[in-house]
Image (cartoon, rainbow, N blue to C red; front, side, top):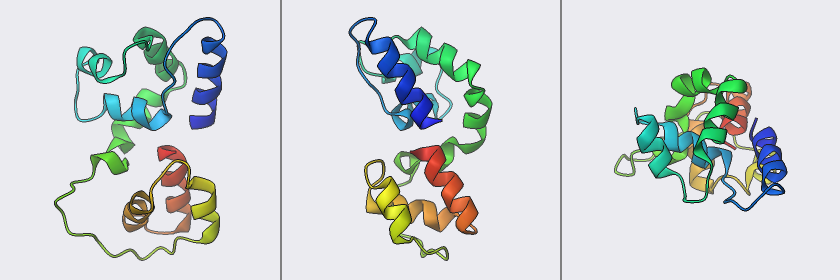
Length: 127
């Protein structure tokens, strides 16, 4: 999904100037019960909010967002003590997601996953 979003942005960028966002930034803008206006304000200037919203609806992301947005590392409570994780983060996960997540973000998702398949799902969702 993140790759499709990036591709959509590259295609639209060729049609005019605009800021490029990560998929995680967009999802984060819609999290926390924000209104559409608040989500729009949260995104950088130069972003065509209506087009972003249309893409999220067309891809069926808004319903998924309602279920999974709380897994975003940016939503984590920084004051909470780190939780130990039971799912091993291998070199493959680190290599594939190092451009999208910090080590802390990887560990946070691993602490929320119940098995390796769920970890991969969360990594792909967030990245």
